[in-house]
Image 1: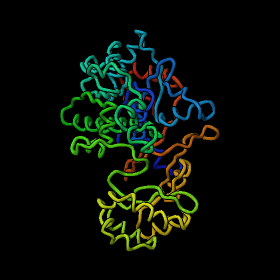
Image 2: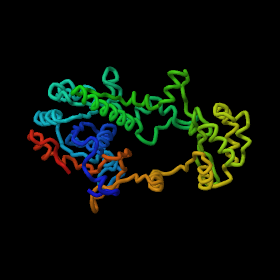
Image 3: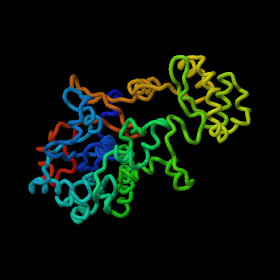
Image 4: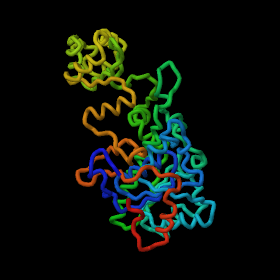
Length: 399
């Protein structure tokens, strides 16, 4: 494999090298988590039904005829097709679970037990197994009886009540934010269980639900309810506890302007030529600025409308005031390059090359590696089956 950053990204060693992950998950939360584990060196075996992961069909956009949604969350994996309704394939699946360090699944609670692949059934055969489950609403009725999709969770957690203009309809976030949050929480649980296993020698069942991950991810808003008795509401782009923390119109567009503390606000007022605002009793501390935003906002807007977004960006950043243009996703990737972050990596050769977003974690000694492009459906089935029959082979299919 080729990489944009040289040999240290292409070697196959990583902090999780030697661990085997049996990935029985599909769609986003689970596959995203297992891809990140694969980036860190784990051997990930993706188990798919004959129809394949749902995201293979989520088009457009596509690369060739392959869904970019699927491609974006399934590198560093090998694919085997198993029909879990077939007794022979069930035996293969259980054999894989017996040899795995980690199993990740997001079946509807209770369904996977029909195939003898639930935690209690597998624990007797592999006491070191870290068994990681993702559900929508937990494993107890009535939540266990409900399907869980990110959009449902955005609606039911309260996020959509916070998103959109105050007098307009509720909106979903632009990404499946709680699938990602749940996937990251799952990784944290897996790594904690792996650490505990070094002491006890035994695995355990790690569970996360989309809803509880969402409530955790809503942080200050859920804290407002439980500790402040306040139910948050939609405020457009405004922040309930900070001001300014908004987009403002410039002479040619919009610019996010932030004053997260009193010192930043004073720097902002000097940069826009209105230092007197920082001494005004209505605005001198954040709590008063937030309470008087309807008065302060037009005063700031009057000044900010006199220059372009680029002009203000240069001036305010130089003054130590956080600000940002509102970019497209493509512009965001380009910005990461311009500030020296190397956001992408190249997998493959020639016409098969894929430019993918790099794993965001850096290590001084064992960095993430990009060994395998996302697999075709069942691409590694034969070799995986052979490996499962051979007790002498520790890790399958070295790239």
